[in-house]
Amino acid sequence: MKALVAIKRVIDYNVKIRVKEDGSDVEKDNVKMSINPFDEIALEEAVRLKEKGVVNEVLVVSIGDNSVKETIRAALAIGGDRGIHIGTEGALEPLGVAKILAEICKKEAINIALLGKQAIDDDFNQTGQKLAAILNWPQVTFASKVEIKDDKAIVTREIDGGLETLEANLPVVITSDLRLNEPRYASLPNIMKAKKKEIIEMNADELNIDFKPRLKTIKITSPKERGGTVKMFSNAEDLVKTLRDKEGLIK
Amino acid sequence: MSCLVVLELENGKPNRPSLATISAAKKLSQNIDVLILDGKAKEDVAILTDAKKIYYFSSNQQDVLAEEIVDILKPLSSKYKFLLAPSGTFSKNFMPRLAANLDKQMISDVINIHDNDTFDRPIYAGNAIATVKSEESIKLITIRATAFEPFTTKTGSSEFIQLKEPEKVTFNKFLEREESKSERPDLSSASIVISGGRGIGSSENFQIIESLADKLGAAVGASRAAVDAGFISNDYQVGQTGKVVAPQLYIAIGISGAIQHLAGMKDSKVIVAINKDEEAPIFQIADYGLVGDLFSTIPEIIKLI
Ligand SMILES: Cc1cc2nc3c(=O)[nH]c(=O)nc-3n(C[C@H](O)[C@H](O)[C@H](O)COP(=O)(O)OP(=O)(O)OC[C@H]3O[C@@H](n4cnc5c(N)ncnc54)[C@H](O)[C@@H]3O)c2cc1C
Ligand SMILES: Nc1ncnc2c1ncn2[C@@H]1O[C@H](COP(=O)(O)O)[C@@H](O)[C@H]1O
Image 1 (cartoon, protein in one colour):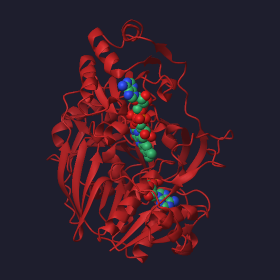
Image 2: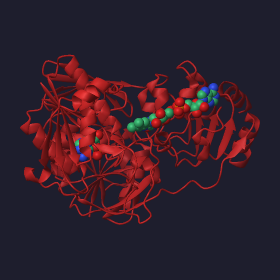
Image 3: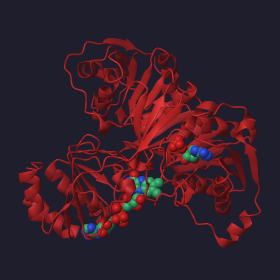
């Protein structure tokens, strides 16, 4: 069985985001880039499936400019077997990404496609669902527990009201939520080994699909700041008094 | 220029995020139709939403899969310019699938509508706002409910249209749902939210948060760290990847204030932070702060109210 993990290179979640003054984008020069945290979780799950003997190959795919190769290499050090870098320049959107990933899933005869539920840069939360639609595969989003039995995936998902369990036939698209697992760190020997693993290079234009963005970004701005500064209290009584008498928020 | 809104129900009525989505829809079109999963609610929905048409199922379809609801919505969608739903795990699951089926790029988490083509949405956990323009012939949009006031009316007269039951797909199956039951107000509609973080220390200690919430008639929330540590279940998580809330009063207790948490609560009207570390970043966005050990300050507060 073959698993595909789609990984996106994003600004590291610890970096304080700054909007460029000309409103064209956020500052991306000289900021730390990392694998999208949800994709790291999806990758960990795929590697665990391989360790359990369910999957025999973990394919790592990333779409973007040449810099994403570094992210693929890092994913191979965590346990991916082979990488595919699909070269593109310029903006990408979930619909276009899903179309490209669908081609790879077909070409590589993938049984389980694992994605993050959401990229923490664009916060779209769409690509996995769109991939499933294009392939006409079942989807299980926001997974917090995955079990593969024969040709079925029994997956628990996090929903607004609690948890829900679905049983989907393979091939399937699964998107990871935060509590699916705790990703490992790459060990030094595995980082060395990853240098020898194969990364296939492909240009997105070779696939003959229309992945041009449909949304036009007019501008990027900073959010409204909360006005004022914090008023600090040294005891509970003063806080309660203020909330009751000044703000009228509690009885 | 008509608009179809897929509503979410709570106790037989559209929930607050759904009513906020109606308000957003009104900015796009005066012709609003709605779809509900449980036909029993249709009279109440008519009164509360002023919809022209209400599509409903005769039996409650709350366990419907994304694949199945998409099969229903796909033929319906050709009549509409806009398809809207409140942003939540239900819409985030089916809406992108529907969008891809229609070959459309959908727009997630809209917080502001400039005109029929131009929308604002938060990116980078709300640390930047993108203004985007879409020329898609059908626009699929999820609405960040905290950014719109709930729609109010009491004058609806709607046409009821019964849909045939969704056909079960063979490649995916609903097995079970574990709903967390609570007598407290719902997190996304409560006017006061009391949230606890890692500082609470254990699931037993979380009772401190719950007793304060009960004293104030508030909903309970949590940081990711509190959920990961098993103090409370996942559906209480507030933040970039949890629920987004904007109550009148948000009290963060034993929460440090990571940007991913702030993304879910920074639009609250008044923010109070209680933390033993006066350097905690949560104080930078709070209106009121109390530095102290929560195990002594919270019982004191409970006594005072
Ligand atoms: C991709 C991604 C998505 C994420 N999404 C979310 C999300 O949606 N929501 C979310 O909340 N987080 C999210 N996080 C996690 C986030 O980065 C933080 O790790 C998390 O919010 C920290 O939770 P906390 O403040 O409870 O814990 P900590 O940061 O450990 O803070 C605990 C606080 O409690 C205080 N404290 C301890 N003991 C006491 C005491 N006795 N009395 C008073 N104060 C005390 C401490 O001073 C400290 O400030 C996400 C992270 C990633 C990478
Ligand atoms: N450029 C990309 N290359 C590879 N995978 C991607 C890319 N963009 C998005 N994805 C995948 O799609 C998931 C959801 O992204 P999004 O729909 O943009 O929030 C991510 O967590 C990744 O798994």
